Length: 354
Ligand code: DCP
Ligand code: MG
Ligand code: MN
Picture 1 (cartoon, rainbow, N blue to C red):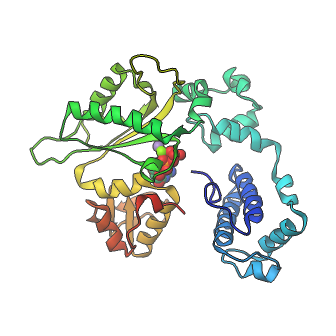
Picture 2: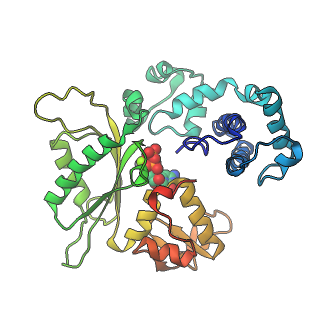
Picture 3: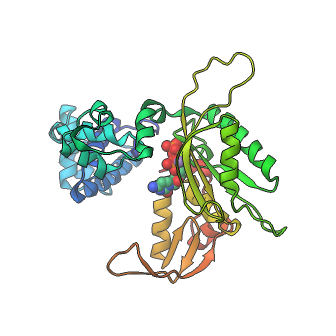
């Protein structure tokens, strides 16, 4: 979802915001915990600079901002006085470009990207040629094949068109399905990195949507919309909950449609009916908004995920991701319930981005 600075209006300290964002991006590409802390620190400073309506002109003034310590304040002064930041050049080490390039391959995270870099790879040709003994998963092979397509955002209109087709095919399989488009689209963005589809169904007639995703996928392949599969959770055939990732294209229209057909990423999430509120929040995002909601929940002794808001969750003191007690559910059916319990005033989807 990019940097804090990526898509808002310019401010009086825009030059500072831009340089610090550049530095944050370089640290983001690097592997150490130290780099991660720096990203967090600069992100905080950038947010404060954006909120600040006065032009910064002194170290003291800079340090009065939330998240700006002396070191960052000195960097801010350097930007003001010289228009540049030496630290940016110092951090632009050889690994960064290669690792960022490799992470553009679907299915490649930071650790794989670094492993390939340390093995000796520098270019996509190295990866394609399986140089230095590296191996690729099936998903990574597709990520490489459609590298440019996958890394191009689609106009909102294209997402509307593809989703419209998916929704009508889904409803033709079961008219009682709830099918909606989430992610950046629901937040009203003018471009989308992928199409995020959420599926559920009220079980009030004794039937459920279990197994619908594999059926929907066959129908979408037949319609020429879904083109490649990246992953499908293994329990998709009988579970109410499942996750699919793949590629799709705009349906071909009869007559002349000469627009290029770019392969687009598609994610499908099926969830039980009673989780829909929590899933709507999770899947609408953005990820930073979600993090702040989870933090809020944790401060109140709760735990929030895409299934619901839980109380009494006990985590292992060793590995915090391991739950020794899954707790009991407090709310999950509507977004409003969860906002209310967390004491967060209602935020419209298009405002859910920092
Ligand atoms: N999400 C999250 N944490 C993640 C990944 C996703 O909270 N690590 C949630 C928030 C996202 C939503 O899922 O908004 C959809 O994920 P996407 O990666 O599709 O992101 P967006 O749709 O927000 O942006 P894009 O337009 O780049 O797809
Ligand atoms: Mg998305
Ligand atoms: Mn997605």
